[in-house]
Image (tube, rainbow, N blue to C red; front, top):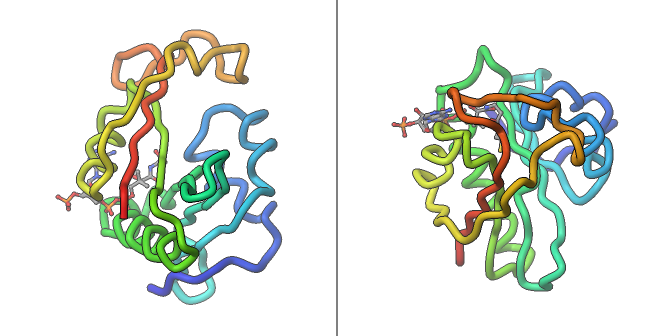
Length: 153
Ligand SMILES: CC(C)(COP(=O)(O)OP(=O)(O)OC[C@H]1O[C@@H](n2cnc3c(N)ncnc32)[C@H](O)[C@@H]1OP(=O)(O)O)[C@@H](O)C(=O)NCCC(=O)NCCS
């Protein structure tokens, strides 16, 4: 498996972006931004990691990350996070941030295992006002609050 900077048509990555975020309007807004790394198995893209700028010049954000379902739990996500951190360091960043749903216990576990630490919570970030369907649950917990995590280099 190779990880490289993606230079193709972003629209071809929509299924991966949609896997990482339940809000089609949010995905449409940020999908064209920044830089995308992809994990390739031959010609097949099996995962992606999108790096975008933030308001702080020394901080980059891992905005979207996903691995195709049949290829999950095989280390691809871990390799994508490691490649993202290396790329951000090469670009001169001092900090990498990521956010996810407070309800996504498995994802919070995954990010902490990759070296991220919890930083802050934004209550009620997810709901119809931001394009997320009413009543969405993750692991039996309402999809409502957003957790930011960071990794300092
Ligand atoms: C989250 C995601 C990117 C992880 O990628 P992956 O390739 O499946 O993860 P890896 O195989 O590299 O897993 C690394 C470790 O994290 C653990 N892990 C990964 N996803 C997990 C989950 N959802 N729940 C609990 N543990 C998880 C793995 O068991 C593994 O543990 P180990 O170190 O003991 O082997 C992937 O599952 C995915 O695409 N999920 C759907 C999209 C998504 O939720 N994106 C993030 C939104 S913010």
